[in-house]
Structures are given as C-alpha cells and as structure tokens.
Image 1 (cartoon, rainbow, N blue to C red):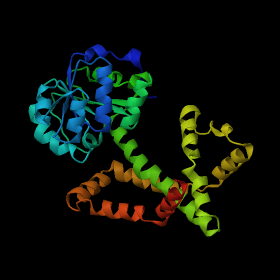
Image 2 (cartoon, rainbow, N blue to C red; image 1 turned 60 degrees about the vertical axis):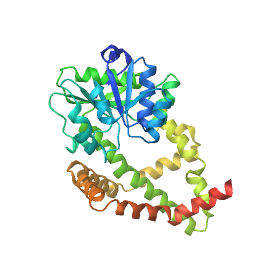
Image 3 (cartoon, helix red, strand yellow; image 1 turned 60 degrees about the horizontal axis):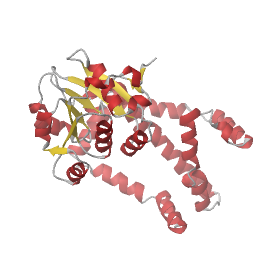
Length: 328
C-alpha cells in the first residue's frame, strides 16, 4: 500500500526560511505561490518573462525576476512550466544557475520520466504535484481544506529529499487532505493514461450514445440535456469522489440502480481492456513521448490543430452550440 502523509507527518520548518522560486506563474504557479505565502513561507519569488503573468505576480505582491536570476537566488525551484517548453528553459536558464544542495520540485514528472530534463546529481529532485486544477488548489486552501497531491523523490542528494517533498506539500496545503507517495514514473503513467486511455473512451461513449439516440428520433436537445448538460453527471462524480464509485448509487432511484448495474454486467470489456493496454504500452515504452516530440518540433502542432478543428466542428459540438444558444 502507498504511504499517505498528512500535516502531522511534514515539517514546514524545513522550508520556511528557504527562498522558493516559482517558475511559471500560471494557474498552478499563482495558486501554489499564494498558498505557500499564506502558510508562512517567508521568501517566495517568481521567475517570469515580461508578460501577463509577470504583471499578475507583481500585482499579487511577489518580487519578480527574469527566470535565470530567480533560479540563482533560489534554494528551491518550483518548475511549473508546460511540459513542452520546460526542457529548453531548464537547460538554458535554470540549470546553469543552480548550486549543489538546491532542490528542484516538479509538479509533472513527464520530463524526468522520459529524460527530457536531466538534473545534476548534486540536487534533490522531488515532486509535490496537486491532483487538482490551479483554481481548485487555491480555493480549497482558502476554505481551510486542501487539494490532495502526489509526493515523490527522483534524486536524494541530501538524504532528506522525501522530507523536503512532504514539507512542500504541506506548504501548498496538500497534506491537509493527503499526499500519496508515488514514483515519478507512477505520476507520468497515471496522468497520461487518464488523458489517453480513460477520457477517449468516455468521449466515444457519449458521441455514440448521442448519435444513436438522435437516429432513433429523439430530439438532440433532450439527448444532450439528459446525458450531461444538466450537470447531473458532475454531481454523480462529486458524490463518487466523496463516498465511492458504486456507493453513490443509493442517491438514484431503484429503477436507475437496477438499470445501471445490470447494464454494467452486460458490457463486453474485452475491446476496452485491449485499447487501454495498447495505450499503456505506448506510454510506458516511450512511443507516445517520441510521437509528441515529433508533433511539436517537426509538425509544429499541425496534427493537433487539425484534430481540434475536427472536434470543434463535428455534429456533436454543433448540437451543443445550438442548444446553448437557445438556453441563454
């Protein structure tokens, strides 16, 4: 079983006097910086280009520096840049300005798992990775709760890397809810499998259910409303997170419970499992990482742009737009 750490397991004193540089002041960066300051971290700074995030960090009262200068001043780096731009910025602006004993914290393990970033051996490399969008990380903290997180260690130069990781989780509020200890590979595989395995299946189920029911003569507006636009599935998922995936069933009528459970037993999951296994193998073996590198550097996101255009202009999306316009 995985270790789960809470406030009592983490010592904020290990990091409270450290200079922590947030590199990437987007939704996650801003929320984590604000949470750390409110947790008592005395010197949180921001490394940023002169853009909207630079202005926002200034407005929020943080000292903002060019990325290389922030890295030079910091004891701890929070690398919160998009995966696709982080390797170049790390190599050119961060790595040359780090010292032995510094700590680099990753919120995404992707670039470590696939060796796109290779930190020096004299650094602690840890992960404090909230399992929540940035907005939620801040809102839950302000409500006295916290977003759960993954915590892990890739390099332990100091012999205290896990303790530093737990302290950083506490600083952002994650140990209020629980920080689950995982490896960097765990975080990468689980994150990518949700994106490439689970969600594509869900998208296809909704698309096929929509097409079938419309073909059977039901109004597209009613089909969409019944499937998800009423936000009933969002409430179901919230209850599932609170009490359990199947334990939320008693919130439904007996007719609904019987239909869901008997239908669940009838689904042939062979093809679902085969698809998931194939996707997992592509992730674990590095094929997806190679494909994504090619898409960025050779194709210049042309495939992504084409797929997005197709998705945004398919009949399903058009039906959504028509209904939303009428519901205003």
